[in-house]
Image (spheres, rainbow, N blue to C red):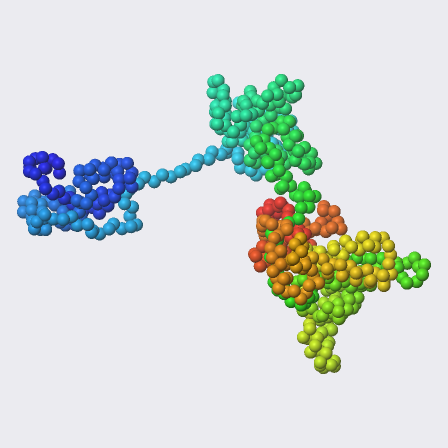
Length: 597
């Protein structure tokens, strides 16, 4: 435009420019910073010569410049009106650039950009598969020696044929080969700096504080500060190994087994006499967690985030409508016969209200179904019939449940009085059992047992009471426990007295003062890794040492309302059984490795 204006030597009052490229027009009408350097420089130059609002769009059939770019036949060129006169609207007056034009397809990029692709090249040694497939360090050494021997024996010019058993020198040299391979993969920059003349260490190297150096065999060792100590060379300058890596794992496993599954501190001390593992304590701790024998002996059971309180514990109702039951004992009693030296065993049936935490105690002569049913009838006569009872899977409770069902079925037959059958059906008790081996699922009853034993051990001690004396004592203990505060006691004399299980009628205070205290979780406050189907576990048995506990495979999981698994069904050699995860020890054995073995 400047060249044409200078050649015509005419003053220009208005300048406009048109293009049939919508992409180019979008470039010009946008800020140059949106584009890369090549496009941005040209857009800036165009905008400096002619502002963007002076640019308009023209279709390709009306663009005279299209004739030059596409070319015309000489016979039609002399009479081609578009080339000589331009489009028709150009002769009607000074045109105004059209601001509206067909936008380019949004799927087409407005600018051809260079795609930057990051490629991470990982160099692996040809023998890396051998390292990963060997299950022990000794096997790795022996396979390496046999491969080296084969190479030498099939090439006579490399030396004489080597036969016979493997020697300690060959095993040591094979280990040095693998150390150099691992160090070349993990410390390439450090080795490159140390191979320079003079050797130096990269200031940004993470092992700078160890002052590493290369020995005569090209092995990277710790320089340290104890060069003058009266110790063997390997102690003063141990070989450097990375924290992660198969060779480090095999070394830790071998040393751990040689020291009869020792602890972390002894294992670290023994390894550091020859090798210096970066963050060795973490590497050893990580590997010891995978040791099946140590896991079995440690017998650390699984835990899970504490579940929310069930609904029946949060809804106010009559005391003992929802009750938990458990047994305590045995307690030794003496008969009424004077000077008798015999003893009688007795037990306590402890009923705990799930809502108010009130306690009812019944002395039971034996842990049998009949004895418990009799205690249950006494409880119902004094406290009213509960709608739900919660207990563990004790044989006496299971038997009582069966007897109650049989009794209810019998009472509903026409032989018995119809009125009694109707009454029993209205007051029927629904029994809920916790998973086997899960006493903490019945925590209210277990806490009641603990509270009762606390008082009885301090009152009775080793004294043998008669049945009447024992009944009197437990009734007094029951009164004490039912008067204990279940909310905080205030020091303000104008405040109400602390709420106790005896305040069964104060439901409003119970809802405001007691329920809010149940918000906080006293333990099991973080979710843990979920146990999955197929996991191999040990089933905890307090009567046996950990090494004799039964093995089980998780066959089915039973998630709670919050989706967390706390109970599983196990497949054992004796059949299937259900256990809580608190009674299980998860073995660090993957399903794939277990199937291979």
